[in-house]
Length: 189
Image (cartoon, rainbow, N blue to C red; front, side, top):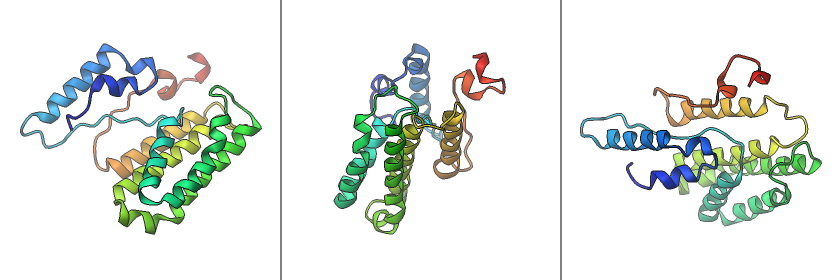
């Protein structure tokens, strides 16, 4: 849209790999392209990783606060165990319980779809529900049994969701670390 600060957007993405001159230059180019008259197809920059739950959780709660305070209360209660998890902890019983609780927020969206969609919009509901999915994925990543390929599988699901729900019939360029998109065994990276 040309709104916002690209530098701030990159800083909010957590990882140094995005906070480079090259990525900033790409965003500046995309902005200029989108503002040129005659360019009907607009370019978008989005993400599909689910390694962290903080931003997605905030968006879920903000959506529910606005459109269903009772559901927001339920979601905040379900998300309470997330605050007790160590960011780097893996394979813990606490993470498994927190993941189950986070998955219950997705169920809240599913149960209230007919209530929440008309008061927001189909796209707003769709996006908020996907944020709840991302929270659940991020927490499940830390639970026992997730396995080394879980993150890659969830990123692939999120990319499929973007292609089907947000950008149907559009071209998509995927930019990811070699270890996530390679056909070689993960141990080689």
